[in-house]
Image (cartoon, rainbow, N blue to C red; front, side, top):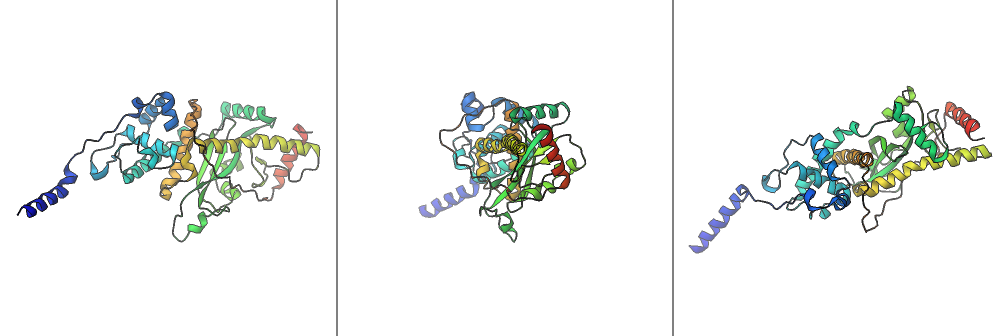
Length: 346
């Protein structure tokens, strides 16, 4: 009889376990760390967290294991930022106590989506006075005139997405990735981003199918972009001269490469700041929104002058897989490039 009673009690406990509200011990990161410790862990300041809470639409509930209780928005944002900073769930458990991995995934997807939906607040192509400031900043680097952005692509590693089109995501280095196009400025801010193409797609094709390319074709923007030889030279996108045989061409190339190096430094800064970009182990849809989300956060930290403290452990960043194939130059591009060489580099 006693054995049967104990079995009934255990069964009752199992059936009613989900109805028991467990009070969870979750600390408040805003009070747990001083300013420098907070930036080191979350890559943004406490003031930025408060600002994001007032902007982002996080009204949809995210519940913990068993459906109890609702995760507060502050903790949701901190959990997502901790993942963006570390790139691994395991390293977040110290800051997000007693939150299951499925709940963490839902939080990351929710916060990433909310940030990406507000991307036009922080990712803005320079116009007007802002364009003039960017052009002056670029010219101060190596004397290259009229530059409003440097363009390049970087690969964000992902797991095999599966399905019939999985091999389209395998890049030339042999791993699966998203090929992300970025236009950056002299301050290493992201001024335009395209994060939807598979790793096998060439840089020039991404640009030719982008909205920013269409805008340059329609002469919406007054200025030029600088790119590597993976792009065709156009009147609005200037590339290096292949095999320069004269001093002016060599001076042009040195200036072009030094100025264009800013986008390479942007990638390094961005990936060190948000280590999740070195390997995004998320659903494909969440991966795309997360890339845009951390681009927004990268710009916010620059706008707010937040400098994060490097972790003691060195972070390995994959060597970029650039589109360094030579693409045929347009005639108008070659003519304009030569005019720039004649006017500024002779």
